[in-house]
Image (cartoon, rainbow, N blue to C red; front, side, top):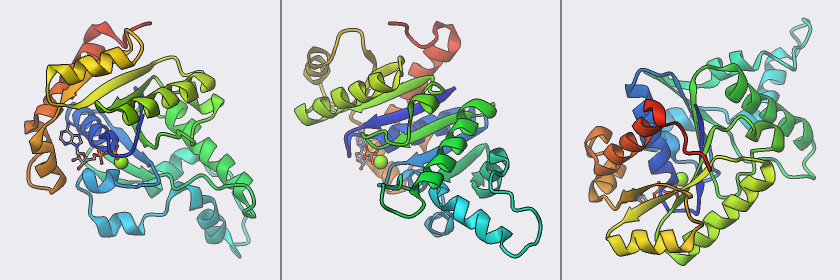
Length: 256
Ligand SMILES: Nc1ncnc2c1ncn2[C@@H]1O[C@H](COP(=O)(O)OP(=O)(O)O)[C@@H](O)[C@H]1O
Ligand SMILES: [Mg+2]
C-alpha cells in the first residue's frame, strides 16, 4: 500500500506518518519512509541518528551526485540509473524501514531544475509502481512532489486535521489539490481530539463521509517526541493500528 500524509504544519502529519511506518514495519512489511516535507523531521521522529540523516543526500540532489560519481570514469555515463538501485543505495536502513529524504522541488530559474525534477518523478514512479514495499510519504500541505502521473500510484491520502478553523481550511485546500491530481482516495484524519465536541466540530466542517478516523490528543505522544517512550504503547498508535487493521483486514479503503 502507498500512503501519502498531508495537512497544515503542526497538525501531526509526521507523528501519524511515523506511526504508520512503525505499524507496517512491526507487521513484517518492508517500508519506505519518505520525508517529502521541507520541514524534514520524519527521520528524527522515527528515531534515526540525526548525524546520519544530516549526511544523507536528498533525492533531489541525487542526479548530480550520480553524475559526479561517473565523471572521468571513461565508461558510458549512466544518467538514468536503475532507480530501484538508487533507492537501495541511498536509503538509511533500520530493520524493515528504509528512510529517504526528497528535498525541495526545485523552482524554475535554477539551471537544472527541469531534469532534477524529472529525476525525482522517476524515483517516485519507481517507489509507487516498481516496489512491492509499503510506502509512507510525509508531505507538506502543498503536495508539490506529486504530479498527475505519480499520484495515480497513491492508494490512500490522509489529510490530518486538528479541530481548528485554520487546519480545516488547509485540509480543504489539500482536498482540492488532490482532486486536481485525480487522487480519489483522500480521507480526513482528525487528530489531537480532546473531547467529543471537537470531533463534532470537524465532522460539521468537512464533507460528510470523508473521515477515516479521529485520533485522540495523547500526552504520551509528546514524550515520544522527546524520545522517552516507545510507539506501541501510545494511545494514538493503538488507534492508528485499529484504522489500518480495518482497512487491511478485509474492509479495504472505504469507498465513496
Ligand atoms: N495526537 C496527538 N496528541 C498530542 N500531541 C500530538 C499529537 N499529534 C501530534 N502531536 C504533537 O504535535 C506536534 C506537531 O506534530 P508533527 O507530527 O510534527 O506535525 P506536522 O508534521 O504536521 O508539522 C509535535 O510536538 C507532536 O508531538
Ligand atoms: Mg512534519
